[in-house]
Length: 498
Image (cartoon, rainbow, N blue to C red):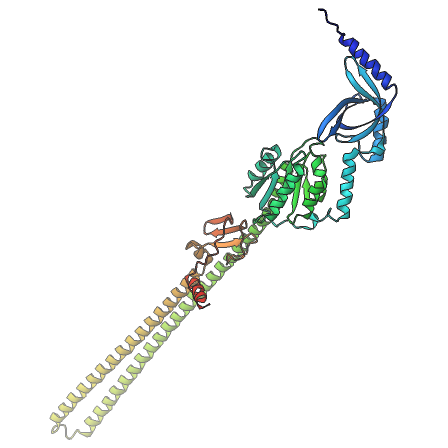
């Protein structure tokens, strides 16, 4: 059997004729701009849509010809403060067109600027007004970011490209800076995104770990995808959070209410990584300056100490040489005086003997003959006496000389021993010797000596100065257990007494 049918063209002609009968003139149409494209020829092409319960229920093409666009766009921008863009709900006056080949479209003749940015933008303005009235817009701005933020809580989707770019740029930085990242998985678009992100902020705030900052990361997307970042509940959760919240949502031109209430915001996740790296770079430059100043100060101090040691050593040598010279001179004078004294005493003895001999010879001339034997005995006695005196005097001189030599040797030995002791003490207190014995000088990031682990915290930057160089380290863990046995025994004794 032959079936009755219509040619496609005739069907479409019929549709066109009926549309022209139903809409013979221009009508006002409310719709949301899903896409907009201004061509180089000046014509503006739009894709209009309607959403209900998150589902698209209608879609149509729209055209604003160049002659109309040149009038409508400046007028719309002057009234609303912005240009037409995707995500706006607009009220347009248009002619309904239907072409058998190109299909249904709207030729837009006018736009009502009072309809502004559509319901979405109206809700956005209302949200901003509400947050401002409640005093929430600047609450995050009153917080302070830690000196060197280390432990960061990241709210993002683990598979998002923006999160991957952020971690790659931050953790694999060329400077070797170390960060601790904790990912809190959340939906970053759609109807459930707000509740998911708010839940993550609540979990982070209640965590036992102390986070330095919360980062909300979301790459680019359409206005509809990013609408959740203008939501009041999300903005309020960010504002009330006691931890600084930083956002990196959307493209370069995007600016959401979440960005407004946050502690700070940047355009992209990669820019947010640079944000934290720049903090460390700034401190690194300061530490480098401190390091140079400290090295210069140590060099000057050591040079000064070396100069003082050299001067002190020279003074000791001069003093010892002078004292030895004086002692030697005194010994020579004493020895000369003793020799002169002994010589004078011997001369006096010999002179007395000579006088006595003359007296005996002159007084006993007459008795020489009869007393010759007695005289011999006297002479013998005189010879023995003189020999005894000379022997005693020589022995006494030798003893005196020996005592003088011993005393001089003792003075020289004492002076040499004191010189060695002083040089040993000076050498033992030399900072370079202390480092060469294996000791380490611990300094914090300000160049101040660290004498206790009490005030240190995980993530601090420290410097360990050895004899052959300096290590720049980061504190990974702290054991508060005392390394002094006496303190442990004292603590135990106090505990038992209590």
